[in-house]
Image (cartoon, rainbow, N blue to C red; front, side):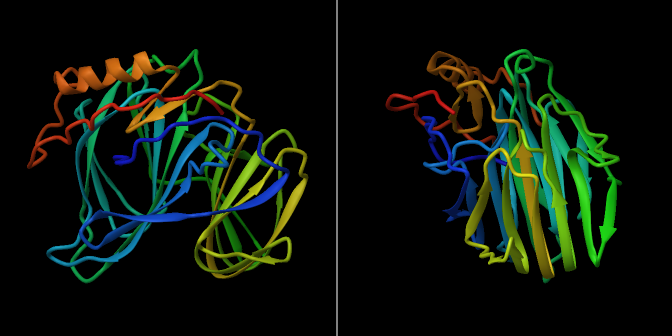
Amino acid sequence: MSNNDTLTLQGSTPPERANYPITSRQLNPGLMVARALPHRQLRLIGPWCFLDRLGPLVVTDDHNLDVAPHPHIGLQTVTWLLEGAIRHRDTLGVEQLIKPGQLNLMTAGSGIAHSEEGLTPVGDRLFGVQFWVALPEEERHRPATFEHVAVLPSLTEGGVTLRLFAGQYGQLRSPAHYFSPLFGAEIQGTGHFVQTLTPSFEYGLLLVKGEATVDGEAMSSEQLYYFGTGHQQLTLVLKDAVVICLGGEPFAEDIVMWWNFVARNTDEIAKARSRWSAGDFGQVSHYPGLPIPAPLLQGQLKAGR
């Protein structure tokens, strides 16, 4: 998905435990997205550098998802749907339909462009989340790749199902390829769930739908719930709910994030922008429209965690 904001990342040390408000904006006519990460007080959770909740949107002839071709460098994108369907097309020649419970993982590396088109029937809902993962230095210039995983490992305890799309949990291991120690899962259902945490990881939780508490605190869908390193477990009580949990070892590298690029300095950002404007990312075949032009590069970007 394309990030229309100009973001600067200047690091700060997050607290042991905190809640952060989510901001909303319009992506397409009628389609709202809620930005949970980055937040000015919390730039990263492990290597996760971006988290948007998409919708829910009741699709009409005039209101649907349509994100024209746009570029990425230095990151991985994760698309996760609860309802509806999206068609992914990219400059590798991949055309892939994604449905709820399936994983689309695109590794941009040195550069890729893609489009995202809603294929949800009129009258049905489109609802999901999308994340970005910052690639570490030794992997961020690798060739672009794409993975689609239709069936992911899961476990069910006490009426609650954890479906793992990143990293490992107990004996479960996601088949998708990541390049930093991390964790990502959808936790859904009605019941009581004690989640084991990796003490060297930090975690963030987002209530996507329904009602839930975390360690006895009522969760709001307008907050991101952050847990710093050192925690052993947390207790979730869900009522017809879906919670997204992201985690990972604190990312040791400073990054600069601007538009759809994750880099290390402003020169890299400027070069990537020039490449996109010159058409050097390749073509997204069969998309019925023009690519998104790069915004103006203005001001001083600051690196940081």
